Structure formats: C-alpha cells, structure tokens
View 1 (tube, rainbow, N blue to C red):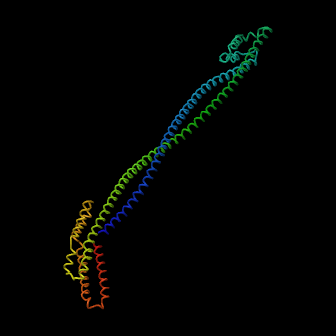
View 2: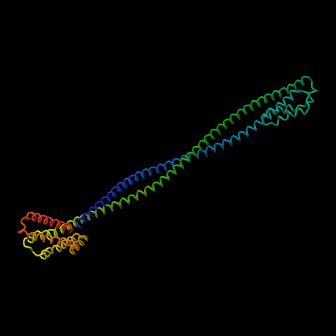
View 3: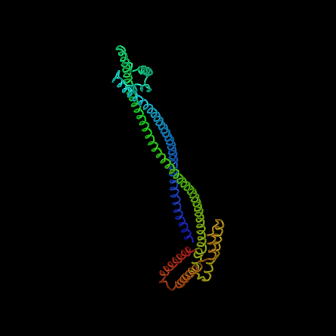
Amino acid sequence: MAVKGKKEKHDEQVQFAAYKQFCDDTTVEKKRAIEEANEKIEFLKAAIEKYASDAAMLTKEIAAHDEDISVWTGDQQAATKVRNLEKADYDALHKDYSESIDALQRAIAVLKKQAYNREQASLTQVSALRGLSLIPPEAKKAIDVFLAQDPEEGLAVSAPEAYGYEFQSHKIIEMLEKLLDKFIAERTETEKEEMNTQHAYDMLMQDLTAQIDQAKQDRTEKAATKAKKLQAKADAEGDLVDTTSTRDADVKYLSDLTATCEQKATDFESRQQLRAEELLAIQKAIEILSSAAVTGNAEKYLPTMLQKGTALAAFRADLQGPVQAKAAAYLQARASELGSRVLTAIAGRVAEDPFRKVKKMIKDLLVRLMEEANEEAEHKGWCDTELATNEQTRKEKTQAVETLHAEIDELE
C-alpha cells in the first residue's frame, strides 16, 4: 500500500508537471497574443483616424474643385454671351459700313461719269445716301442742296453759271470720296478690333476650358482617392472589431486559465501534502506491525523454542496479538485528523487483515523451520561430528527466518 501510494503520488506529480507546463506555455502565448493585439489595435485606431482625416480633407478639396468648375463654367457662359452681343454689334456695324461704302462708291461713280448731262434716274444713287445711318448730317444737307438743283437749268445758263454748277458737283464728289475713305478706314479698324476681340475670347475660353478640364481631372482623382481612403477606413474598422473581439476573448481565456491553474496548483499542493501525511501514517503503521507483531516476538521466542522446545500452538498464539488493532486505530485516528478516505479504507483493511492467508503460510513456514531446528538440537549430543554442519544449518535457517520476516514486512 505504501509503494502504491508513493507511485500514485509520483504519477500525480508527473501529470501536474505536464499540466503546469501547459499553463505556463499557454500563458506566455496568450500574453504575447494580447500584447500584439493591443499594438495592432493602437495601430488600427491611428490608421482609422488618418483615413478619416484624409477623407475629410479630400472632401473639402473636391468641394473647392466643384466650386471652381462652377465659377469657370459661369465665366465661359458670361464671356460667350458678351461675345455674341459684341459679334452681333460688329456684324450690324460692319454691314452698315459695307452698305455705306458700296453706296458711296456707286454715287461717286455716277457723279464722275456725267457732270452735266444727267438723267433723273442717275440721281437715285446720290439720293440713296441720305438714308444711310453713317452719313453725317452735314453731308446729307449738302446732298439735299445738290439734289435740289434742276439739271435742265444747267443747259440754259451762261458759261459762268455752268461753271458754278460744275463746281458744286465737284465739291459733292470730293465730300463723298472723303466719306468713302473714312468709312473704309473705320471698317478696317472695326475688323481689326473684331479680330482682336475674337482672339481674346478664344484665348479666354481656351484658358477656362483648360482650367475646367484640369479641375475635373483633379476632382476625379481625388474622388477615387477618397473612395479608397473610406474603403481602407471601413476595412480597418472591421479589422479593429475582429482584433478587439479576439483580444477580449484571449484576456478572458487567460484570466480563466490563470484562475484554473492557480486553483489546480493549490489543489495539487493540498493533495501532495495529504498524500505525504498518508504515506507517513502508512509507514508508521507498517513500523507498528513490523516491530511489534513479528520482529519482536520472533526475537523473543525463537531462541527459547530452540532451547526448550516450546509447543507450536503457543508460538502461533504469540504471533496473534493486539498489534493489528493498534495499527488500525492509529490509521483511523490519522484519517480523522487529515480527512483522508484513503487512510480510512486502509485502516479497515488492516483490521480485517487481507493478507491473513499469506501471513499464515509464512508463519507455518516459520514453524516448520523452527521444528527442524529443534530436531537438530536434540541430535546435537550424538552427532558431534555433525556439529559444524548443524551450526551452519542453524545459521542458514536463522537467515531464512530473517528473510521471511522481511517478506512479511513488505506484504504489510
């Protein structure tokens, strides 16, 4: 029973050592996982904040691009509207200049072709000049005076009068030619101004278009970047939730594991202490049984039996005594003190003497050996020649008895 108890104690130590190694390894692993998770959580929080900040900044920049595009588009529309008005004014003015120049050219040609002999229809070209908006009032008045003269009168007048009429015609032609030159110059200047205005408009539209196109491109790129930032933020938030959940689970697992391991360690120490006390109690019981029940009686009675030839029945009776009851009582007392069910069971078994048959066989063997020793003692007188042999035999038998006592001790 003591050997079995020691083995069970050793087996429990081995088993607990393996469990303690599991606790230590798992604790180190979980602490490392928790530490790594905490670092990752801090990193993810910083990343989420950065993604949110970047997305907010991009939102402002996109709004600025939208505003620029709107303003520049409005500038294009306003410039186009002004340009259309300017072009309409130019077209009307250019048309007036062209019509006036054409009318002046035809009127001058008519007046130069015939200074005196003019038909009434020829004066229509000159009369038409009065309806042109570009003809100055002074010129229109001179034309009216010129047209008011009767062409038939020119044939009946004297030479000095005819010369005066011719002089009036020349003055009209000269005036019309000056107007023609003036209109041609002004039309040319107007065409140049129109060309410059159109060029300025084209350059403005080109510049605005380039700015709008660039702003649209920048907006598209920033919108794509913003979408990536928001997606990265969402991914990081999801990762943060998973990492936090895993970390919290590891923290709880570590807490539970620590509590369990500490409890098992406490239980193990308690069991080891209990087993140690049980083993001490068993060892004490063995000492009681060994020293009192067998060894003491054998040392006391074996020499006497060898010398006096005591009856075998008396030897058997001496081997039976209160030793077992004393050992059982001791075990029961220790069982009560320690609260050990094991010692209680052993006390019962000691009281019942489960090794009775084995011990009986050993005791019978002891009796037989002692009988043989007595027989040898009785023949000592007539077998002096065998004295040395008998002495040796007794030593061997005594050694055998001691060996059997040792076996009894082991069985108990």
